[in-house]
Amino acid sequence: MRALAAIVIFVCTLVFAALGGILVALSLDLFTLQNLTDFLRLAFEIENINLIVGGSGLFLIIASICIAQISFGRMQREKTIAFDNPDGQVSVSLSAIEDFIKRLSSGMSEVKDLRSNVVAGKKGIEINVRVSLWADANIPESTESIQAIIKNRIQEMLGIEETIIVKVHVGKIVPKEKRRFKKKGKEKEKEDVQTQERFAPFQGNIEYGD
Image 1 (cartoon, helix red, strand yellow):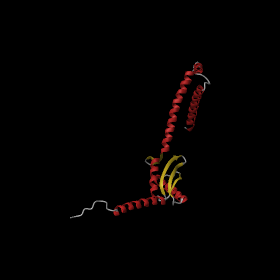
Image 2 (cartoon, helix red, strand yellow):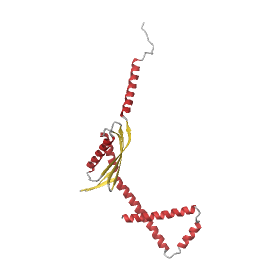
Image 3 (tube, helix red, strand yellow):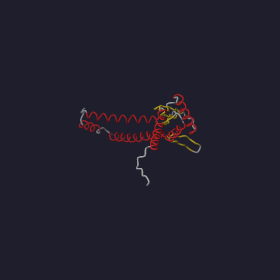
Image 4 (cartoon, one colour):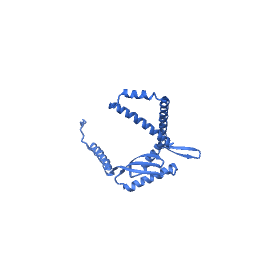
């Protein structure tokens, strides 16, 4: 099957390259449409040329369908993980695994934000994680902990022995102190406004009784 797919792709590439070369040659005036017409007229005078042209066209149609099926099948395989149960095959969406990893990050105190991209291949499952860490986190220890948690939980959840590779990229380091300072600053500003309103001088008219 792989050999057939390689042959189909090679032939289609060759045909498209030839068509592209003809168009480029026409644009550069290397030959004219009349030259091309004369060549085709001579070619069609060859015996059984109609069968050759028809067979080539049919082959290109079949090749296009095969390439579409191969590409679509590969895309579908890359979007899911499938394994066999005694009662039948089970497939798990990679997006569901990504959502599961996102929920896992809520229990990691050193992680501010986490996003993942899961890819399933013949060598196993590769998980690319992009995280934002708090500044007080120890990066080597935190990333090792993230990798271990994700790998173990995914293996437990799927119940498979596939190789799981977790790659972590630290995109941001966010200082907690700045976050707390802003929060305290807003609270203090709110308290000052309330104090001013409480002790503000009376500006209305005073009415005295007779």
